[in-house]
Image 1 (spheres, helix red, strand yellow):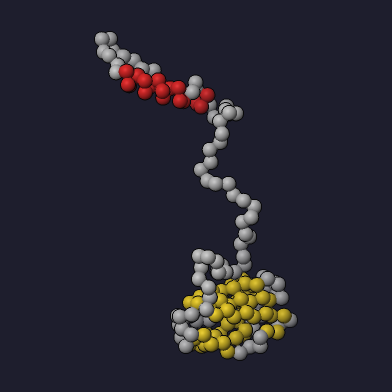
Image 2 (cartoon, helix red, strand yellow):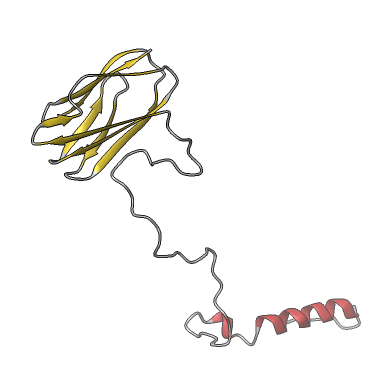
Length: 157
């Protein structure tokens, strides 16, 4: 409520502004959060989510998208009944290449790239990947921890 001292004059602009503010806030209905105004449309701070959001993958590094660069070298390995395919050997990459190693195992395990200290959980029957920049030269073993299989040796030159 606006109180005016006797003899003072309130400019018409100020009085109009106060009246407009009171009309905009309503008649006290906004003071009680349990009372909803059915004619008011809800305001949302964030856009609604959709059900088309992809499920998180088992790999620690996402696959290439519009925001991630394409890999220079993709190495894919499958493990079935303790057999590695392609057979264990050496894979050579150039220093500076972006490399993705994708492994699918028939049993749950853990992938590990020595020297880079990278790894990924291997769920049974689902591919998992590690992606990295080959910035260290040398010979590095790629293995599984639980079944202790050497998948291949990575040569970075």
